[in-house]
Amino acid sequence: MEKNRSQSSSTVEWLNLMVSEPYYLFHFLAFFSYIPIRFSASQFLSPEFASHLLHREIQAVLAFCVLTLVKVVKEETWEAFIADTLFFAKIFLVAISLVVDYHLALWFTLVSLVIYILTQQPPCQGLGTSNQLTPLQLEALLTEGNTSRYWLVEFRALSSSNCIRGSRIFPELSITYSNKNLSFGVVDLGLFPNTAEKFGFSPGSMKRLPAYILFENAEEVTRFPEVDFELRAFTPTITKVWIGVKLVKASFLEEKIKAALPIREVDLKE
Image (tube, rainbow, N blue to C red; front, side, top):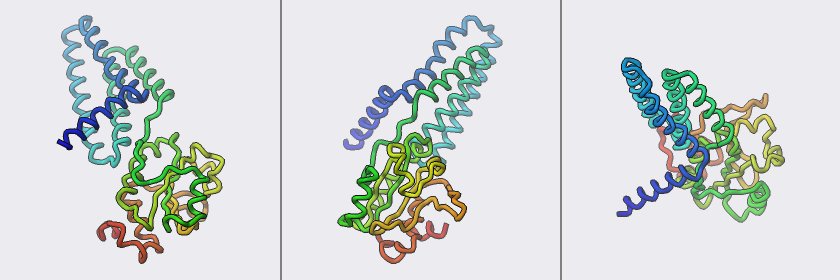
């Protein structure tokens, strides 16, 4: 019974996003506008060309399904999966439209550009057990010292597609790893760009967000991704396992709170 309720609430949530978020609504309208155009144009097509178009549409649908299955397995967050799926869908839509008429392909290309310019994919709204903080609130928590000894803080800018694609990772990590010694916080530097340099982010490094800084008693211990001596950031793919392994491999956590982080030994060897 509870499972059915959760599924129905999830369906209602997605339908609400479809209607309320321009990003999803405009994509929905753009894709389904092909259906009436296709049926209205079919009466003017010869039987041979209509058969050829149908074969191309079937091929495009099959190729899109294969790519979707690959992305389901490969991508770690729903936001990244949806972004890639919609991108491939727009490519196939333009390709099929080009078979019908190049004017129609130009129209859907223009629609895609308008959607890209005017809308932005919404991030994951959940925070897990992490705290949404301003830079001043973060400084106050670190200096007061009456909360957790360790703070892992994600610095993001929701104007960045990378931050949106990975916005679900940090809340899920906070649910898994937070305890009395380790707390999680989120700071949106896109809202406070003037404070970025205070935390060691130059204007050029803002493009490499999200970044993660681990504090112990108000002192920065380490940050991921790391910055080398030439101030070039090493930016690996951010995943839950990658951050978790970095947490355990941090020297100060190795002895003190490793037991509290449920990461397998096989992950530490990667």
